[in-house]
Structures are given as C-alpha cells and as structure tokens.
Length: 80
Ligand SMILES: [Zn+2]
Picture 1: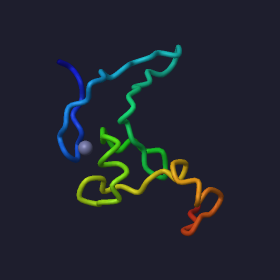
Picture 2: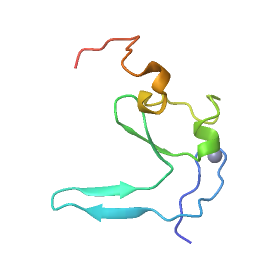
Picture 3: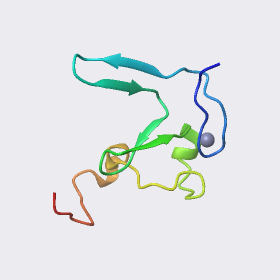
Picture 4: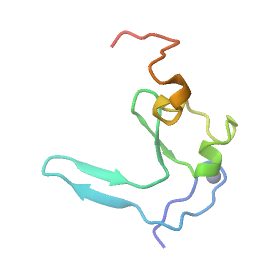
C-alpha cells in the first residue's frame, strides 16, 4: 500500500496520492493534503483531525477558505 497516513491520528487513508504534471510543475493531490493560511503545505491530515480544532491533532492555522464565517476578514494583517 502506498497510501498516506494521517499525521494526527496516524490512520491510513483509503485513497492514494495522485500526482499530476501540468507541463511545468508536478502537483500532488490528495483529499487530506492541507495547507496553512499562507498556502504552505502542512501535510496529510484526515478530516476528523483537520476539523477537530484540537491543536494536538492539527497544529497549524487553517486556511480561511474552509471557514466562510471569516471570509474577507483578516484579523492579523501581514505584509506580502
Ligand atoms: Zn487523523
């Protein structure tokens, strides 16, 4: 098996990682692939860990895309 394991609870995914190549960049795709607020990949976390709001299971800041309540609000402005 070549499926990833959740970095939080270590459960194995039932889906393999999919790699696509768009001519310039190889993209790694998986439903568990998470990114932080800045778009940096944080690793593989299952939905349970990702949505747990438990920092011991998912220690990174979530992308606000997944929380429409806060869409458009930036509580901590950053210089880009
Ligand atoms: Zn998990």
